[in-house]
Amino acid sequence: MSERSVSKRKQQKRWYTVLAPEQFDRAELGRTPADEPDQVLGRTIETTLGELNNDASENNTKLTFKINEVASDSAYTEFVKHELTRDYLRSLVRRGSSKIEAFVTVLTTDDYRVQIQPVAVTTKKADASQEKAIRRTMIDLVRETAKDRTFEEVVDSVVEGRLSSAIYSEAKDIYPLRRVEIQKTTLEARPEEVAAEEEVSVDVDEEDVDVEEA
Image 1 (cartoon, rainbow, N blue to C red):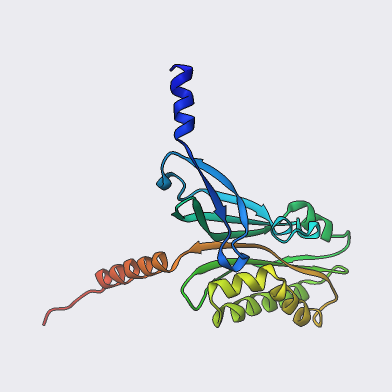
Image 2: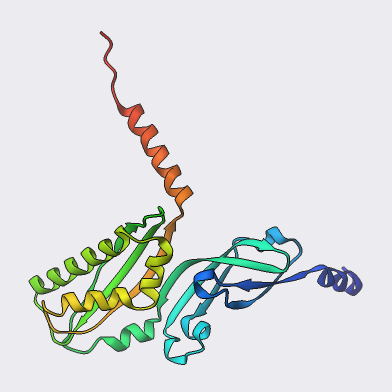
């Protein structure tokens, strides 16, 4: 391929400004090139909460967004993952303390399925019954949070630290805690995907039913 044809292909590429979801104030996440708008769809962009808020103290929180719409020169995204950095998580754990994790899958009021992973770190070593009680508290509060909130509201509660604070307030009475965090939040399925899975499940159940003829 000649240098001229390569140069022509580069000129044909169009640059799209990638924007965060409305709940993150449509902050600019960067720019991405493509020959056609459809090629931009599905691309993921990773940033930190610190970069979005211009606050270096929040750089331990990573956010991942996925492009789901293109209009003119703008590419719009949806939230797909929130995750704390490994270095930050390691810094929370001290020798002689307990690290208690939970993995909770919830359905929001607008039918988004989300997995939320809280983690609690104690000041000293907790026994098995205390760890079990703290884990139960984390699971219950995560489920309670999602029960009457939309997907956007759940994400806000996680990113802004309200959910971790609520867990800390409840669980610290079980055993002294050093820190509670939501270490990871992942969008597992959108409403249309949840509906499709439920429809398939109903179809399978109906096929498994034995019908007796009189």
